[in-house]
Length: 265
Image 1 (cartoon, rainbow, N blue to C red):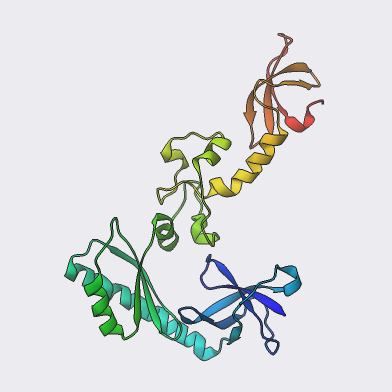
Image 2: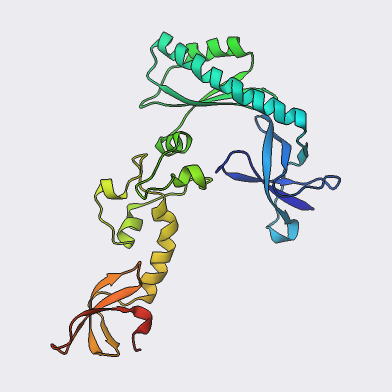
């Protein structure tokens, strides 16, 4: 049995589904899937054999390939979602709710309408849901999301000058800790290690492993080392360039940066 890795949103989390024997799929195909919220369209990100993975129980099967009619229906949903956002914002003003709507999503079969919003505190939106249920005649879910998810939806440019990682390729958020910033010897000033969302930069997480490897391989500060010019001690370290600065015991030799791989063991 082959298994498909399915992505529902661009830069979204990926999920495994079984591929029925009668169905031949290729990477890039759009398919119909039955999820816990209803029928949805997903993109085949990759295909793997069962022997390539751990045993995965209770996987749902891919229903079928998406048809032209399905894609037209999806486009209609996306157009209507924009109108939903406008209507929800009007109702928020009507009930004077302290919340801001960011996005709305229909399932393909319109069995459910999910509305994403941000708010500083909990919001009593029971009257809002009642109005929306009557207006759209479907199951309504209002989902409050955190700062990172807000940034993923809104998008923007990070401090590095590139499109936000969460918007371009991060499917799901990993825990990021201040220890990772310390491990990379970064300034702990919140402005220097926080993203546009106000949380710790996601790149601290996926760069941390490299710094961990380099810390294990490179000499420590004040460690005695030897290069072609002689012996000395490490007085500075640059992990990005993989170099250490050596102050030689011989006073007539000027301190210099040396690639740690060129040190004499």
